[in-house]
Image (cartoon, rainbow, N blue to C red; front, side, top):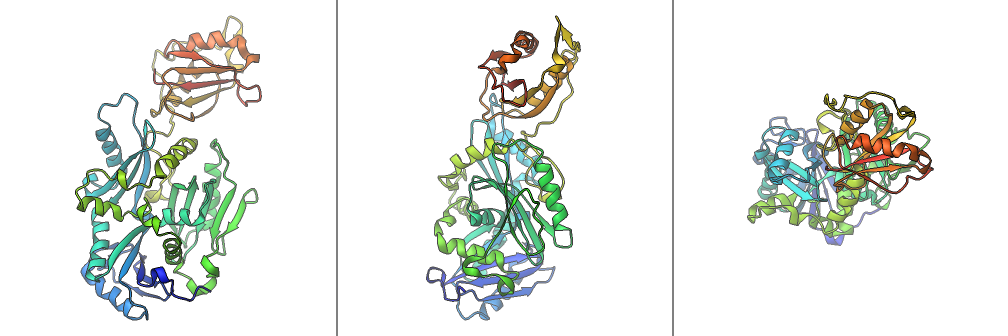
Length: 447
C-alpha cells in the first residue's frame, strides 16, 4: 500500500465537491469528507465560497499533514466541450464559432470562459466553463490561503490515467455517481454522468450498441471499468482498472477520483501545464491574454488532428445523458436534408439499359460542411441510385467531388459522372478496390 507521504506532494491537498459532499485527500493519503448544506453548494457547484471555506479548513485540521497547495476536481457535468466545423469560404470564423458555441452552452456565452483551438482547416476544439464556477473555486483556495495549482476535469483525467492511444470505453463507478466516456488517441470524444440508482449495464449496452452502428477506422475493442457490478459484452476486452499501488476495495471507496488525480500529478507534474488543467482559463484572463490557444499542450494539435478525422466516423446524436451528452458534433452530424425540386427532377432507375439501383454507393463528406453527404444521398436516390452508406472522409479539404468506381462496374462510370455534373464539379479518381463492400465511392467536395 502507498502509505508514505509522496515527497513531491507533501504540501498538497486534492479537493472534490460532488452531490453536496466535500472530500479531501493529501499527499500522505489521509482523507476526510463532510456533507455540505444546499444553501452553500449545489451538487458540484459552489454557491458561497465564504461559507464553504470554514468547512474545508475544518477538514484540513483533521489531517496530520498540513497543505499549502491545492488542486480541485471539475466534474464532467460542469464542462462543455465539442468540435465545431466552419466552411472553407467562411469570412468571419470567430463569429461563426461563437454562434455555434452560443447554441450549445446553457445560457449566455458571455458567462463562460471559452477556448477555440484550431485542429484542422475546418475543425475547431471548443471548451467552455461557466465563469462563476471557476472563479468560486479559485476564491475558495484564496480564502483557505492555499495556492491553487490545478482545476482538473474528471473526464480528461480518467482518460489520461488509462493512458492508451487506442480507442476504448471507460465506465467508472463511484459511490454517489458514475462517469462514462469514450476515448481515442488520448482524447475524450464522449462523456456523461449518471446516478447509481439507474441501471448502469442497460446504459452501457445501449451506448455501445448505438456507437457500434457507425463506421470507424479502428473498432473499439477495449472497455476499461472500475466497479464490481459492471457487465462487459462478450465481444469486448474487459480491463479492470486498478488504483495506484494496489489501492482497491473499501480503503479508498468514494475517494477514487482524488487518488487518481494525486497519482497523475505525482507521476508527471507536466499535466498541470496541459489542457487537462483548466486553471489556465483564469490565468489567461488575469494576464490579459485574448486567446487561450497557447495553453493547449504542444501535442494537442496533432493529437486532435488525428482524433478529429477518426472521430467524425462516429456522428451519433442522442439523449442518453441529457445535458451531459458530449458526443454529438455541431456541424458534423450527417442528417438527411430534403432534395430540391431540381434534384428530384429525374427518378428513372434505368437509362440506356443501365440499372442504377443495382449499384451499392457510399457517400462521404469531404468538404467539412454540415449536411452535404446527406444532401448527396438524397440527390442520388432521386435519380434512382441506391446509397448504402453515409459517412465522413478522412480529410475535409476536397474542392471537387471525387468519383471512384470499381473496374468491374466501369459501365456505370460515365452515367454517374453525367448525373453528378448536374449539381457538382466532378473528378474521376483511381479505381475502387474490388474487395470494397460498395461499388462506388462518392466524396463530396466544396464545389
